[in-house]
Length: 316
Image 1 (cartoon, helix red, strand yellow):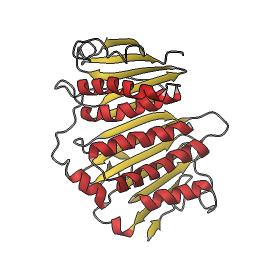
Image 2 (tube, helix red, strand yellow):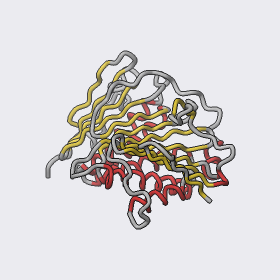
Image 3 (cartoon, rainbow, N blue to C red):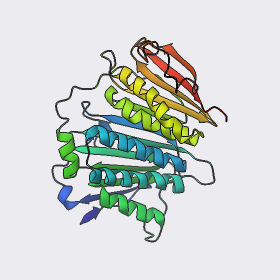
């Protein structure tokens, strides 16, 4: 049985659904007295995405979660539960958050604690307007989220949008995360300021290649790259991911993508110095990649460098 809490006063609507079997000993994000997240255990992975509330962003988020699930060793069933619940939260933002045809900001944060996968989906739209209407798609989506997550919280106000917080602490999640205990804490090297259609911050560095490859392929598909290019793009993202695991790399790494028709600009950093020169172990880009790689250059940072790759789909 789930417990639903609605505040008696105030403009903000808060719903908390907690299955009784999960109420005791729930691990999770550290929060202050008001319930706002103030910190996490740094030894576990984090992924933060800044997107626009377009339908294709739901596919991108699912793809990123697949990469994170592979990294964590999650079994298909708990991973599918996470992907479905998070997809519903993102889809509600895409469909309901913003009036008119123009999209708005949509952020997705995934943080891992020793025994939980914590996800926050946030928009800046009009808020949840009709929670009590059973036949409304939004109501169905919220019910699905509450059923699949060990804990789900929905916070909404007309002037500040909606925030959906989900915690997944089932046995399949706990078993996978138990194998990752004892990892070293993530570093604190600052991430450069990034802007783009898609912006992500990823930690630890060895997660970068697995997640970034999926983001780049999704962006390339939206930009009109043909499917046969995906394996070639994977060579590039794998090479960047390898550089990110070098001893000099630590902390959070930023990824920004700007996509236009037949063109994708990718920026990644901070990476260890000389990453661009040593990307392919000092050799030229692979023959299949060269026709797509219009530019590849480095920008020095206070610590390390950022790498920019401009990729184009040749016209046929």
